Length: 198
Image (cartoon, rainbow, N blue to C red; front, side, top):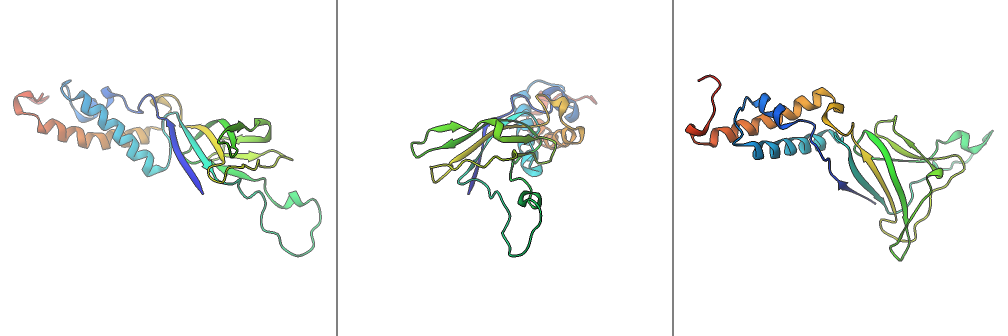
């Protein structure tokens, strides 16, 4: 079994308040708080829909047991080293793109985590989704705790600000947020609305 939790959410959004107001043709500050909330909601929806992380955010993946490190055994004759027939074991880390792995911890029955040295694994950020792969000769640590015994903490996202996020994603967020923004503007009394065409 696995568990997947957000530790640190993004500190900024892929779309700024100014960009969203321009997209929605809003030129008043009356709804700034609501528009900012709509940007966050649109980003969260788009991340769930795509299964990706847009702005740098920290996640934890918990595993009950180490991943299966070798394929099924079969009867027959083989030539050469056994390792040449099977790929190195790896753990796929959800919410690409992967930026970095902060730590890997193994938990004992006392619920105390011990950091597993990074010399035992390779962080593959080139693959989508990214993965944590064993280095040659390394084996997965065996946790003593029966549930959530292995924890991988990592950072996912395109970068630390909206400029790193692909433009089609930013446009989709602006379009999602625009729907709510226009609804919010229409609920205010007519005298409080700002009209560009007046």
